[in-house]
Length: 192
Length: 192
DNA sequence: GTACCTTGAGAACAAGCATTCTCAGGAGGC
DNA sequence: GCCTCCTGAGAATGCTTGTTCTCAAGGTAC
Image (tube, rainbow over all chains, first blue to last red; front, side, top):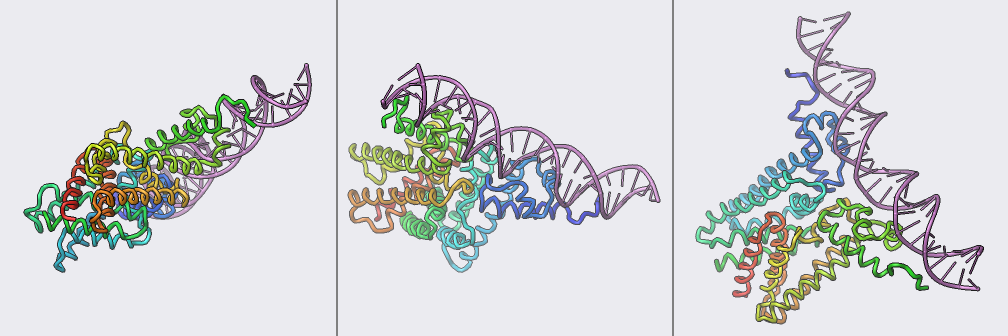
């Protein structure tokens, strides 16, 4: 037990997932080899494979990790705005606005991964669907707090606006889709 | 001139583009090899390369071809509904509903291709952005006809709803995102 | 000190695949 | 009939990459 390694398994895993997140998100799954992950993380191929049976396994671990991290970032970004008095559902679009300016922004990692059909299996697909479901659930908690009388269709509609805004910002490379989505959301909230 | 081939260049090109559309759309760009295109089209590798300098060229030709065909399908689907008295902008969602039931449906080919970063270059990206721009322009013509007094933000908002509905149907595998988007659009049109 | 176990570095292996090359056959021109 | 050109079939090439294997170094137990 407790071999005196230069790096614990947990530390190595974090380095790997950080590298995976950077590379997979920016270059796509097919565009990143296991050797690239090794080079970027400093974790040897041997150890990589001792912790993940295959590249597919690593991809699944990455998606799960990214899910928890992205959701945390997103809810933090919204909380900061609601604490300052903003409407929670509208604040989602301001959070997206902030995200789009991140260097290397390339849209939603989950939607992008889903599109790489040849790299993706049913496990990945399930994690991706779960992520989107999770986002809708989170929006629902925001809605029950700030808009308790909103009709059932409101939250799914906001979710569609969010995903549409994300993919269009990736296509066009500017913020205008988010502005359009936000205005639509304002109108829906007013009349809901 | 006019060599007595079994197949004219134009016929071969059509076979190739048909095969490319089926394969690239269903399996992604990275998931389809030039040999697969040959097998599915019956056009030899030699001829394939004589008409397209590289796989990237073929992908660009496919995207352009799919653009014209998809736009034609979309506008036909909407015209059929407006002829029957439907509102043009709302009919877009009914057209999507029809599309989702197509066997092998996998969302928007252009968004999916854009996500395959390692397979895509700037030419492809330009065709993809042009396709989405084109869709917005088309929505604008529908709006000027059926909703001449609509505010400027309406068409971009509908476009965001459409793209959001498309990607979410691909994620969840059901029609509910389209229903949500349609209801949202109805409310926006009522109050616009 | 010695045997053992784990690890990293990197070579080796095996596919998959874009692209090019070879070869033989068929059509046209004369 | 003969030469030439074009074509398809498919082999050959070269590169990328997922995965495994080899070997030597260093730490641990006793």
